[in-house]
Length: 186
Image: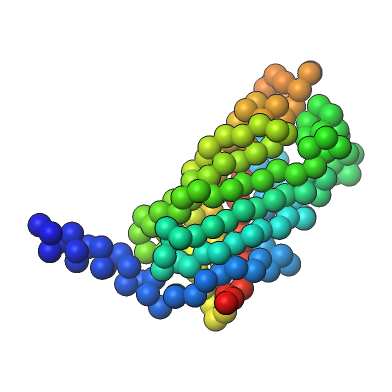
């Protein structure tokens, strides 16, 4: 039985052995953070145009990985300048008081070939919650891409207060998709 466990462990690590590089630098112009939600039952999408990341991720050694992502909440792009201004206001993101959201990973576990489970703390508007995001990794030359998604409840972070606290106009569930392109570094 120990031999079988050793073989399975080795088999899981083999696909990663050719990727023994640490990815540290975010390539912002090739990366994206998108979100989706429902408004009056209609699917809506948006993105954030400014974010940064402090990374140290070696896919061959995920237990040693570190990741911190910060999002400039005022960089929201809903596709409508009027909506962008509204959600930056006090009842939504309140960007004057809370200009940034962050995600800090505290655990990155391999769950298959180039697939990971990233657990960490999401902080928005002074509130924090633990989330788990399934993610995948792919590399091409010196670039690596981490793709994943997760969902959260906007009510957990007081996003949409006062008349917007009800979920009849804007749903409570928010989906986030990320595509982080990184440069291998020393």
